[in-house]
Amino acid sequence: MAALGSSALLPQCASCIRRVTRLAWDAGRPLQQVRTKTKTAKTKAAKEAERNIVVKLRKDVRKFGRAGSLVPVNPSTMRNRWFPKRVADYVPFMQLKQLKAEGAAMERDFDFGVEVPLEEVVEEEDAYAEQHVRPQYVRPVEIELLSAARSMELLQTFIPGHIDFARQPIELEKAPAGARHGASAAADLLTAAAMASKPKPDANGIYGSVSTSDVVATIKSALAHNDEAARVILNDADVRFVNGHAEGDETRVKKLGTFTIEIKVPGAEAPVRRSVRIRAKE
Image (tube, rainbow, N blue to C red; front, side, top):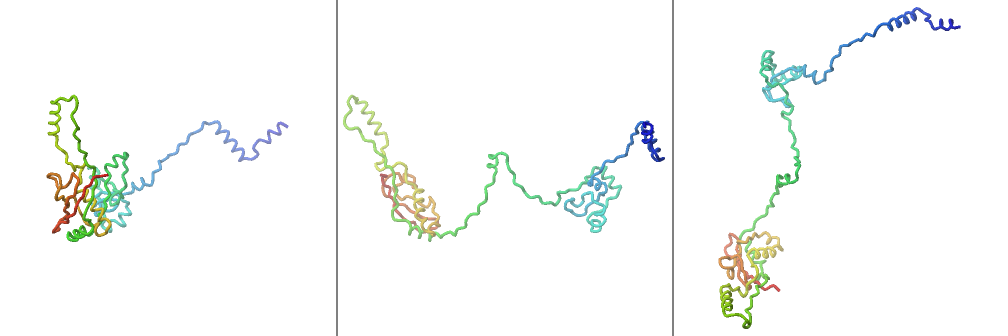
């Protein structure tokens, strides 16, 4: 049975015998390494660069360069478009070889003729950005100016006869009543001399003053209730105190009472006179 079973495993045809024999022969020999020649696959851009030829531009070409530049271009583009239209010329081989030896630039300028939009520059430090930020331009409002005569008419109409101000009066120091016990005559003389040298404050003096700026601000508040009168341009220099002002200064008054002011805009013939009443603040 054993002999019958082993004979059943033997090859029965000539092709099978040859296959088994070949396998047995190959098993007895060492494996042979087969080397194949491999080439590094080149990119499409590299292959295209090898095919390009260097030409000299006769005109400015967007994304290539200015006239006179040496740029690489596809031979079909040069043959079918650029050379017939006189956009570029071929460079002779000997001249091209000399230019390469001299190190002449032969590159394409992809940014030539391309408009790049401006982008906002964000500073890292807020303080630096605030110092260098440009103020936004605001177009001034165009207002039709009034004539000097019309301005004086409006001032005459809308300014009342009296302009009232309230200020805190200065309290005068009272002299001590009666003789002081234990005080010497010399001390009394020194006190009297000090009081005599000390300037006496005005009986109607006030803390602070009423200036032409205060008067102008009050007048503008009265003119603001009328659209046309609000267009009157009035400055501090257009108002002055006629009387009662501080010595050498016609722009302010420093005491209680009633005083006269003159209001005159540039170009007017005659001023407008009004009274300024300064009363004690309650």
